Each structure stands twice: as structure tokens, then as C-alpha cells.
Length: 247
Image (cartoon, rainbow, N blue to C red; front, side):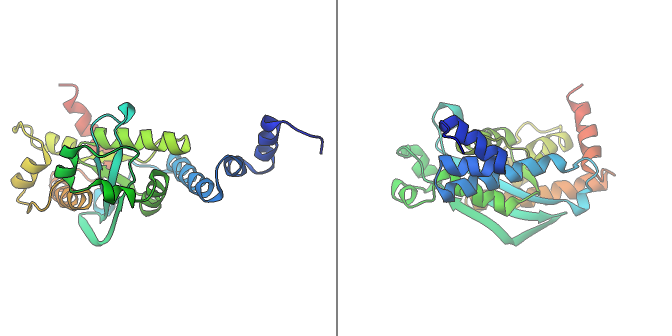
């Protein structure tokens, strides 16, 4: 083989084996494997059909992030990820996920007080890439659910792009939007208010796993309410909710 420059070697690796050996040549072996796994999970999401999925058999993961602030593109970081599996209306409390994530900067004092996560805990935590890889391994191809998905999706998207040059492709349901459609008469759709309205015991707030478990209980009640008014699939839910934005 004739001598090639750096770009030529990368193109040769790509032609021989796709993106994985290219990544491996740029990063250490463990990171390359994690990045390749993350990209494969993201690619697979394009094959899934969400609209025909029945609520009573929904295979999903309710998750929550704790972060250092509200701006993932302005330097704020993920501190922890919590998640729990749901099957239809059933919350599978035996199948949960939790990880701290190592921040690159010191944690603001108000965030330490709110979350209970301090700098020493952050220093011992897995790197962001490892935390994302483990979270996506737990999620696999299941539907993601969260309360107020905009915040969480922005942080995941930013983290996935920075670590793996890919975007979040999982279908996602927002319990806040579903609750808003089902309860147009109330003004407060915060998690605390909805937990109280649906008579769900409020545990430790601003803990990623605890918040996931409470949000999962909320989803269980919302799902039952939807089916009681003859909404049985995700497609039916989206179609009915779309009318709310047209009013």
C-alpha cells in the first residue's frame, strides 16, 4: 500500500470497515466502542414506528436529568441521569437506572443544595460519554418519557453531539403536555402540582431517579385516563393533542 496522509488513512479505514474503525483511530479503544454503540442506537431509532403503538402495551423508559443550569449550549452540564422502565400502565420499579456524571467545572452552590450532589461526588463519577452509553444501553429502543421534555432533550442532544456527533432520535412523550391536554382547566402543570392533583406521594425532589419514579407514576395515571376516553394508541393521542395547538 502506498504511503497515505492522515486524511487518506481515515478514508481507507472507512472504506474497509465503516465508521467504527475511523472512530477507533481518533479515540482510545474504550471510547471508540462507546461512541459506536451510541451511534448504532441512534441509527436504529429511525426504523421504529411509534404511531401504531398501543398505550396499554407501551414499552418505555421514564427519565430525568439533574443539571448545573438551564443552558446546555452555554456551558451547563448534566450531573446525573435517572430512569425507570414502564410497561403500559405498570411502573417496573425493579428495572431502574441511575448514574452520576462527572462535570468539567465546579458545581454551583445552589445546585449542590438543590440536588445533594457535591464536587467530591462529581469527581468520582463516570465521564459523560460513559454515562450516556450506559443510559442508552438501559433504554435500548424503548420510547422515552419525561416531564417537560424540552429541557432534557436539549441537554441530551448537546451531550450526544459533543461526545458522538449524533442526535437523539428516540420517540419521546411529554407528561406535562399530556396532562395539559387532559386538564385544560388548571394553570399549574409543574410536577409537584400534578403529583398532588393525581394523589401521588411526593418523595425526594430533584433526585434524578426519585423524580423519574414519581413521573412514571404520573404517566401511569395519565395513560389510564387516556384509555378511559377511548384513546388507545400514540397516533390517536398525537392527533387529538394537535387540535389543542390549533385552537
